[in-house]
Image (cartoon, rainbow, N blue to C red; front, side, top):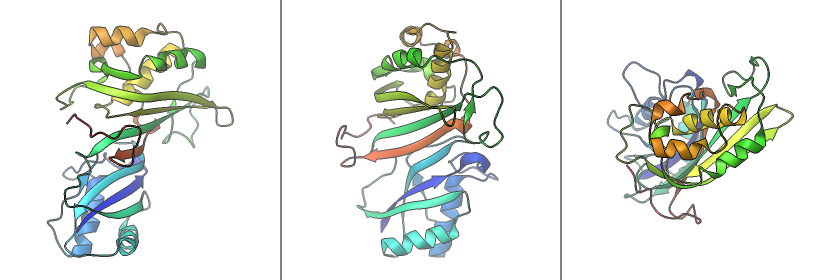
Length: 260
C-alpha cells in the first residue's frame, strides 16, 4: 500500500531533509520510523524535494510503500508516536501505486521571514533571518512583479544544482510587513524552485529594498546569467516550505512540474 504523508518540521537541528551517512536528517528519521513499524530495513521514503540544513517545513510531502494495509488514522498515530519533538505528521493518505511525491508535483509555495530589528532577537534567531538596514516595502513590491512569469533563473541558482533546466515559472510573489513582530514575510508560489533560489531571490530583494540595487535589477540579472552578480544568499533559518501541490489539489495550475 502506498502512503502519502504530509509532515512539518523544525529544521534547526537537522542536516537538511535528504538522508546522509552519519547525519541527522528528516528523511532518515522518517525512514527509520517506517521501517521500525514494518520490522523491515528495506522501505524507502521519497520526498517532494530537498530542504537544506536549518530550513523548516510546514507542509513537506513524502511517500512510501508499506507492506501492510493500515488505516490512515492508524498510520497517522503510529508515525507520530515515533517522531522526535521537531517533526510532526500532519496528514496521511492512501494513494494510487503510481503516485510519486517528487515527480507528480505541480507547484510549491515557500515563505521567508526576515526580522528587521537593529540586533538579532534571541527568540527569533532560528526561525527568521535578520536584516538591520532600513527597508522600503514599495521598492520590494515593485521588484517582486519582475519575478512573476517564466524566466531563466541562472543568476539565482547556487553551484551544486543538478537541475537540467534553470527555467522556472513563478505564479505569485508577495511581501508584507508585520508591525507587531517587526518582520517582513515573503511568499513565493511557483512550479518549482532551484537550489537556494528562494534564498538568493530574498537576498536581492532586501538589497533592492535598502536601495543597494535598482528596483528593476532582477531584469538585468536574468540577462547576465551570472550567480556572482546576485551576491548574497539569505540565511537558511528564515525559509519555510509551506505547501506542495499535486494535480487536482492546485486547480489554478494543474499541470505536472516539467523539470527534474
